[in-house]
Length: 261
Image (cartoon, rainbow, N blue to C red):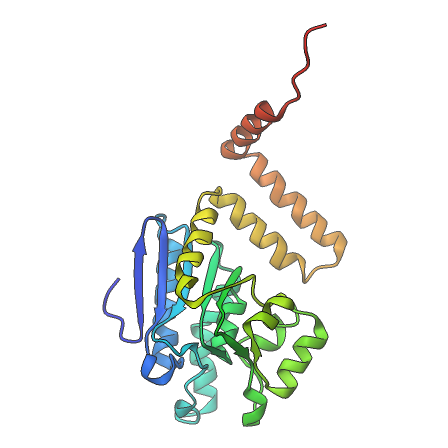
């Protein structure tokens, strides 16, 4: 895809990379970037050739330093600004995105620059990454899902500390609390992200989609309803040819071999 001004969208061999491309302002997410992300993410969802979508930031200093605060208060009215956001609910769309999402994080990942990766399934951080939700320091709160996604990702006490103090944490601490899945040297970041993405792309797409739905939706349900959701999704997969064939092949290869009596 071409024509974007604030992002770069590249597709190759089943993977789609979205690069936040405003390095001169630490990839701050302005309204135009949010709209272009909306278009790119929709394109990736509808494209049968895309198995996994990856996010990264241009430049050496940041994945993204968050929302572009220079745009705060510039909308014609608060009501119109909220209406525009609801019509293009990027964050809600990412929450229900059926394909695996991977974030490759380096440098600053603050505010919306952390909230975007929180909607991803796998987060890989470079050793120089600093992750935080500093909105309270501006008299505001995280409003792109951070107050809800962070406590669902790390222990509640850690989430509260990060939201209430606005302090960022380093990559190794983020790994300790489960905010990122692995930490690698900066020069290996994209290589590792692509390796993980390609491993995911080898899995059956429908099984990945159902697994994502079971995990994400199930967290908001009582255990009994979550188990019913799991059973429905498993049943759907077993009614499909691909799952039956893969299970049959697996069972044939794993079945115990006993000598004839």
